[in-house]
Amino acid sequence: MLRAVDLQQVLMQTTSVERIQQTQQQQSELQQRYVATHASEEKKLLKEKVKESDESDRARMQREEERERKRRMARDHQPAEDKPHQGPPEEDSPEEDEQGGRINIRV
Image (spheres, rainbow, N blue to C red):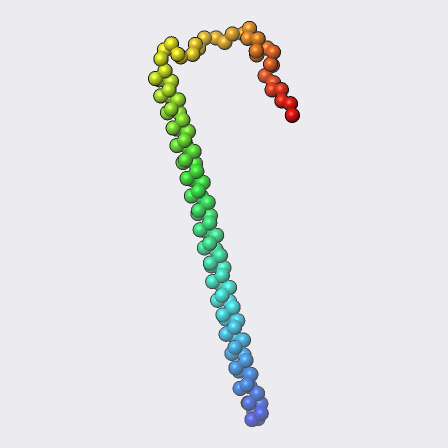
């Protein structure tokens, strides 16, 4: 049988046990929210990185296309007398023989 003193001690401990259980439950909920928030932020960052990469690739491709168009237009609009002669290159070029394809750099 339960004595009055034992019952009184059990009742006093129930409030502390209840607080501990609430704290544990809140901790697990907060941890789940933290993990979910962190995961969503990580996904968002990954999506932004991919978008930036795609946008930079598009911009680079557009610049290259624009350069190519300008070259074609300049070549097409160039007068016939200004066009460079596209015959065989001269083999007796003294500049090429002297240099030998090397760059002389002094520091």
